[in-house]
Length: 457
Image (cartoon, rainbow, N blue to C red; front, side, top):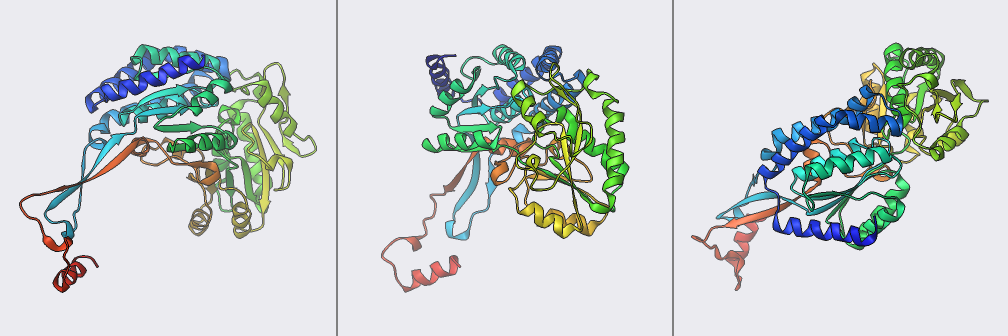
């Protein structure tokens, strides 16, 4: 798409928002239509995800389509409540008056989505944005072209031009979009690109939400139920072949249980993905050769404890477990693939101190049946969100905000928190005319000063 077409889309969006600010009834109507069209196109979406990432229909629905439908259902149910004015208390110094906050849309929103969950991470923020009354332009990833094409088709068949639009293309189109002025930018992707988005947004004082990633630790202490722990770690780490921003990036376990835990993890990999995951048609592939080659270089046969096989033709890497420490090459950046380094600690204080020496992760997981240890880890480490005795599942709760902290993200969304992200709350004081207290007006005197101090203390 050329620059003139991009400018025309943005101009059309501004005109649409100016002339047709979507009211609550319109938003609900469009959410219902989006829900209907997603259901009608489920097979097409699944086929696109199969082509891009080799996701099975079950995984595609569970981790992408179903999550979006659930968010739409939630918003339809709650949008009237979220969009209503909220009465606030009024101090006596403002008597007689009433106060309230009024939710208002920002305006024209840019949503930049990644390739790892190309449908869900484009459409779920869109659901929140239009629920809050915005118009939106989606820039899906060029690395998942089949899903991007389906998204464009879905959007064009659901929304009129100017309400929601799609811009296809690569770095050039994305860069040009970021040079334009938007009222809000929502980005999901790498920390490196997140810095660029933030710099570009600052030129226009545009608020942003940045959903990024990081090296999310998975702590296991000696009190954990190792069989169940292994089952849940394997699910969270190797879902989408490890290409998940909240996947456990590394396993950090008590040295006393390492061998037992490793044994249970190996069993679970075979149970969940078969003896030969590369030939398992339901095991996803790496998105492209660039990412595949990057991951293959991280596999060191000298430190591999389990797995380690890969297939250049299929772009598949089997679930792999490796010995590591914090100085290992694999521990220098987020892995974002099906390789799980395992590190050990002597006591939980050592683990906490080591984690806190590094960047703040998007997620943290602690497997322990010791309540004191659970609380100590949760209270002592900084991270976006996480689970006790599970992985990933915190993102499936509408009541919980999903987002990072510092290097792993800015802002959050999902459910009410998603509505709030795309909403500016106007603060209103509605003053009555039947009485006007003279305290604030000059000339001042001792009595006024005394009364002001009485009110304001």
